[in-house]
Length: 295
Image 1: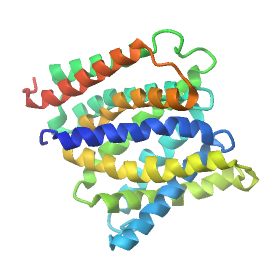
Image 2: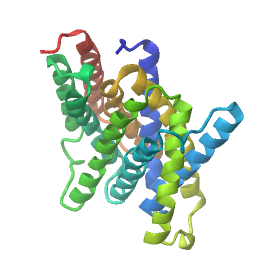
Image 3: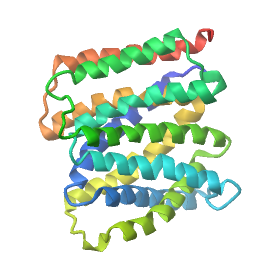
Image 4: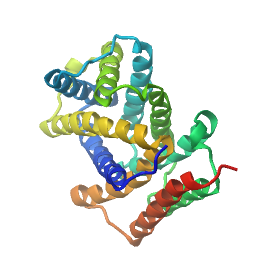
């Protein structure tokens, strides 16, 4: 695994900004869309964009080729399940709290990396970085934004989201040799195929009466926060590995709070500055750990 370049760090921050903006857009979309409809809408718009893009660029979509079972598995684990879990949980959990709950991803990544990836073994610096980042995020929400009894279950459901993302990332590493656009479009096609019948069986989407604001947010979630973001995610994942890519989860809450301040009038306190420093130190230590010998 090569050492991350400045470009890699910039892409990681841009990806965090995009995903940080997703939470308040999910909140807006949930005003008139159900959690399952939001999950399907994100996937459908993203698939549409990717199919059109691949068609114009002459890029092969290999959804039904040799690796179709893997595409379907990644589509389920990396798209359908986390999109639904996050959309469901955010009904009762604030968007900024949903963003903070995504910080559990690096913990999952470290555990799974330790078990399944040879060059992602844990060492002192990596463990220290993860602890510092996580404690920084916990400190950010150490008072009035703590999870309470009324939304505890919904928060647990949201936490399933980053676990699915991490597991999906692990599966995606098995297809490192496949072009990003081919991989992204193929798993999106399978996610649409799998989720569409479930949507009509579980609920009747024709009865929805969505507002324009919710629909615009849903379109943004599909095109920007899914199609474009997934291309970036797979590039970072293939270039730098599961643990480095998962560090995006530490930066997402910072952007989630910034967007919450801009669009929802939420306050920015000194805890955000402390958390930001912790995130930067965490990312630095985990990246530096690649030079250290695994004990």
